[in-house]
Image 1 (spheres, rainbow, N blue to C red):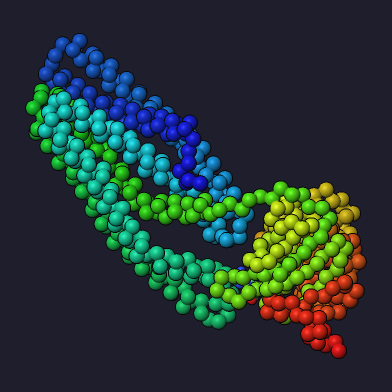
Image 2 (cartoon, rainbow, N blue to C red):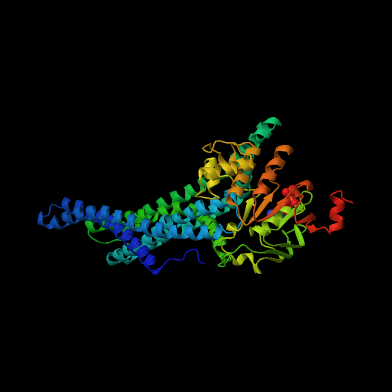
Amino acid sequence: MSLWAVSTKDLFRLLRAALLGAAAELAALALMATAAWLLLRAAERPPLAALTLAIVTVRTLALLRGGLRYAERLAGHDVVLRWLGELRTRVYQALVPGTRYSGGDLVTRLVSDVDALQDAVLRWLLPAGVAGIVGSFAVVVTATASPPAAGVLGGGLVVAGVLLPWLVVRLTTAAARESAPQRAELAERAVELVTGRRELVAAGALDEHRRAATRVVDDIAGNERAASGKTALLTAAGVLVQLVTAVAVGVLCHASVPWTAALTLGTVSTFEVVLPLIGAARRVPEIRAAASRVRAVLSEPAVPAGTRTPGEGHFRLEKAGVRHPGRPPALKDVDLDLSPGKRVGILGPSGAGKTTLLRLLLGSQSPTDGRVTLDGHPLGEYTGLPAVISGAEADAHVFHTTVRENLLLAKPDATEEELGHACETAGLDLDLDRDTGPDGESLSGGQRQRLILARAVLAAPDVLVLDEPVEGLDPAHGDAVLNRVLAQATGSVVLVTHRPEHLDGFDEVLTLEDGRALPASAADRRRGRP
Ligand SMILES: Nc1ncnc2c1ncn2[C@@H]1O[C@H](COP(=O)(O)OP(=O)(O)OP(=O)(O)O)[C@@H](O)[C@H]1O
């Protein structure tokens, strides 16, 4: 899908904005020229009637210029905001289903990169279009008085509107390329200073880290100063070209004094439309980078949405495996038959692949080998899978709101009684109106864990998935909580735990090691059974 995909209607809107902008600038140019003509003609003391038309024209043009500029701003922003809204929706839809981008990167692509593209249209494309129209018009009008003057004007406009912006783009691209590693280092150091501040203070390394970050900032500032100095020189060169061209047009134009003055001042005005392109060119490398990042998101193949509705069904893993690039398989050749009502326990040391297996069942990770099916169909074919299978995942998110709102996510129409019952089951004794902080930061680790568990209990899915749900609680309290949760569960249960005694009465126990399921005898030996 193209980044610049716009409807024909929007193309016409863009053209309308460019024409309104050009008309506003031409009105300004004509105003300047007519005013100059009027002043010099008035100095010749002609009869007033000879000036009436020019006086009326000056007044009309002054009004027209303001009105047209306002209309151009409205038309330009209208088309850009429409396109931007539509583009942001497409980027959002392309970003959200996948987990390739996270945190700051996701926000940057969705917000800053798309905003940068707005500048591409409003500060670059439209002004360049307007400058092109106004410049061509000025050259044609000047040619009627003096073709050589028109030639000089055309040449000056090309230097100021094409050559100098191109040089600025080259300069800023080179500077941005040079400072890219420093900027990446600065971002990394800034994140470390904020998130690892406590550890750095404890280790007495805060000042050293701060000094290192300051050195990077100074280096970046130094590079930027050097690049700004060069672009400022190019901007000054633009003004010089403007002056030289205006003088040359005045000299080459063998017309009456008022007409020559009009053309000379008209030349100055034309450059006023073209010169801002030199400054705007500074942002081109940034806009290009943003465009390529957004294009990368949009060009990734979309994950087709499933349409099948799941029933209380039969999950199966058949020789399922997951590989992450450059790593040994996280899961390999795992078979599991999870019929309705069955309870399966999963044991294994850290890094054995237990969470990966749960993610396969939940559909949040696709197998790179083998199959994961529900009633014989791959999970990707289903919509609304979480209504059937959900639970307390290790990395579950706590929203920055109240305990109550976090619980209601699982069951929006839950009564106070149901909320209270879920909290009691999970051993959560918090005020329901208590604020949780970002990702549950204002709760203790145990409170956060029990809130996630209470949410899973309230959801009461057909298949309840629990990833080490009471790991952080003291063993006696944790065991009591887990027993209550298991006693409540009416459907299937998949429980990951490090403690085999949690799995008494389970229908099947799967022991993983290095991503593989151990044969029953080896698994029994691991659990200390004869
Ligand atoms: N996104 C990833 N990229 C690369 N490797 C990964 C990724 N996610 C998991 N792994 C690796 O896959 C293996 C299995 O991870 P998994 O989280 O399933 O283990 P686990 O048994 O749940 O461990 P723990 O008990 O410590 O939670 C580990 O070696 C882990 O480092």
